[in-house]
Length: 454
Image (cartoon, rainbow, N blue to C red; front, side, top):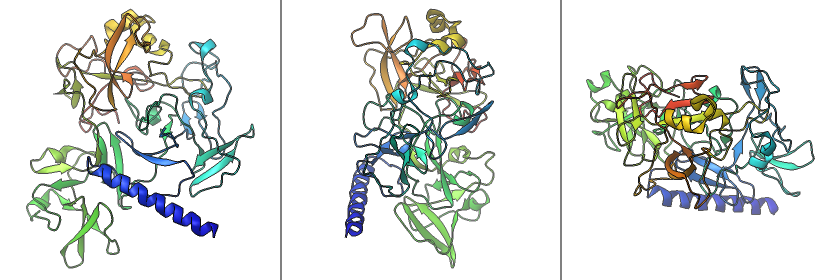
């Protein structure tokens, strides 16, 4: 009887989630996901940049810290073995950096432990494994929830439901694999057929082919029941064929262009690939009039004051005067791999790479992008924050000597003093490991011209 009751409860949860999703889809196209059994109190939140993610009962995003290789070893959690603990790591590990281990970390006296900034998602004594969610027992005896074997955490940076400020499957400035062992939001599988995958970029969550990351496209001339791509059109664009056994579901449908030849349809549009694309997840085909790339979910718009500029390698985001906007990425070399890009965290790394340790010099070389008096935040991704001009840290409410600056994912964005005209990118890749581990990267809008940071 308990099993039947549990199944009914699960079906009810899925139905309720589906209703919420349908309501949200009425406002904007959001990425669909595979419904899975969830432990009590868990939920799925739709987020602007990461798509659907798991969250706790308060709506706080849930993260994992998967084991990954760095320069001289590996760091992170092994499956069933959480390594984020209560110990305050005051010395560098030497595993990620070219510098030796044993160096004292900045602000060591006030440095928090790993669990202080990544609170564990603790499982009650009567918690039972639920689908891919299991309970692991830590070395100290505490029971912690895990997903697919990896221990689960929340982030102190996330303040409201839908925030994903603690980590990302894609970092602000580069491939997560290049910056160390980055925390990632735990998320349900995307609800796409096995032929397809979703590539995360600063433009949104792009639909591609799973086999080779080739972009897929749709034509303005097509309808939900007919492909109007003729023989000439098919010299450049080829239909994405569907296997014989597949059936329509959710956003996905199928048309039969000729007996036995089926083509995939996504959200009412037949899908195509473009064999002449030069690189994976290209945007080139979308430049052809009447054709568009396909997104499971578009990224939120940048502030209306911002501009876009084409340069020798791509398109970058600029401020109202056309000056290129930069993001700063930082990940320290302690054993618990704390992020150092957020303004609530030690600024020593940023000041070392941009101002020889001095905040005023750093602001001369990399000025903040200031927000005008009447500027308004257009989304959760782009916000306006107050920065203490003397320290570079977040300012307290009502504090004097503060700057009102634009922030992306709650982290300030910057300009480069070396840039002289719109589209200049003189400070792209500035810093350690091409700006990926401790440094600056231009905010690329177009990512298929060779100037990509992904």
